[in-house]
Length: 190
Ligand code: GAR
Image (cartoon, rainbow, N blue to C red):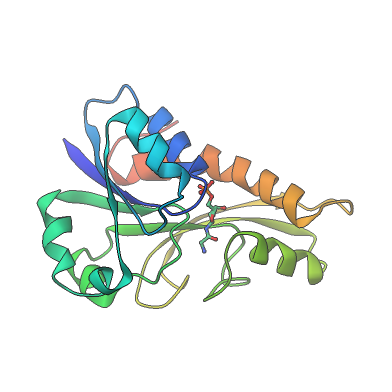
């Protein structure tokens, strides 16, 4: 049994897609969702699935005593899905190559601090890019700079707005994040 811990603080649509993908799997377990947002959609989603939720405070997250809590759940993988805080070094050192993130653009462009959600899509459109997409990458000590595991691109229409682009990019995220996670937990995917 491989435990996957999810860190998420937004609407939670990726978490929903991941839980749906793995719902009948006996080899993968989601024991904990960590969030820093008391209004995060994942709280409701976690309740529906009977998954523990931990609402964390920044000081605790940044203190290395938090690693004991994470260790308790014996994660095989830590999956960030709309989690915006920088992952502290102690956690990266404790789980090397075991923390992954999804970013709603084609890194290395449109990444870094402050580049999340609608800000990413607004910047992509402001630069008149012809395509955007998703990047799934390992997390290192710098925002959005870890080794890229996978990218998928999509065309931008002239009529796209940050909202329409966000919706299209989310569709790609939902289609691919679970498959990459599946590959990392060691099961062959189609
Ligand atoms: C997703 O688009 C994800 O790529 C993005 O936040 C959204 C969360 O949506 N993450 C970042 O921008 C990280 N820099 P969700 O809560 O519906 O899964």
